[in-house]
Amino acid sequence: MEQLSLATASADGIVVVAVSGELDIVTSKQFDEYLSQARTSGDVLILDLSGLEFIDTTCLSILVRYWTEQTGAGGSLLLAGARYDYARALWITGLAQRLPMYDNVAEALAATHAAQN
Image (tube, rainbow, N blue to C red; front, side):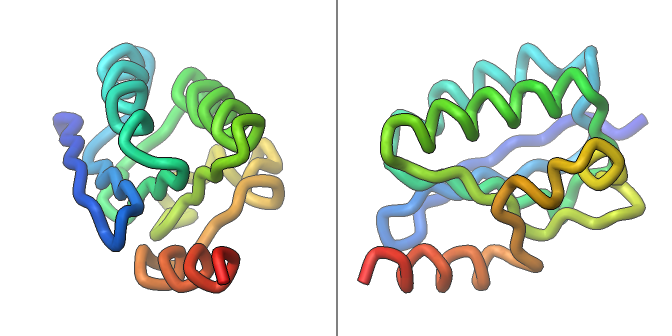
């Protein structure tokens, strides 16, 4: 089992949270608290899931809650780099069709900049 690692960076005023490891019931509280702190930094939050090894429904519900809160407040939450083999639950639940998803952080940033102009 891979440990959860979370890191925050800022790209042109946009908060990017890199997620590595597993998001499950054991790490859900840590993930929730981390996102709570990270999202206060900006209106746009990008989750870089390229290092994600697994996600369960507990953490999917956290993603949906933050996505709903961000969009409800006029912001956005975007997912980048999610790989089907490791984040299959996004596709099985239909969230991959509902949440804004991009192949990588660069594409998510480009889409954000295009929407702001």
